[in-house]
Image (cartoon, rainbow, N blue to C red; front, side, top):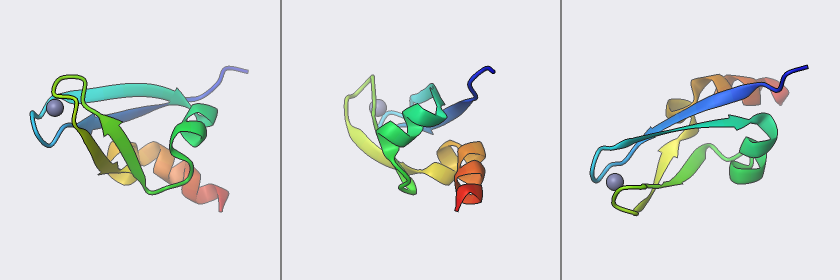
Length: 68
Ligand SMILES: [Zn+2]
């Protein structure tokens, strides 16, 4: 069975460049846990910022909520 991957899309509040990651369920849990915010580091200006998981990946947010 193929692993499901989620698309996490964020954009930097400082320079506006966007980042897209494709992570599996395990990778998301490992990296972000079950927190409602994702912490990202911009590859352009290197600042760290937080985004709502809801905005970054609505699909994951839905799935994550269903687990509870
Ligand atoms: Zn940036």
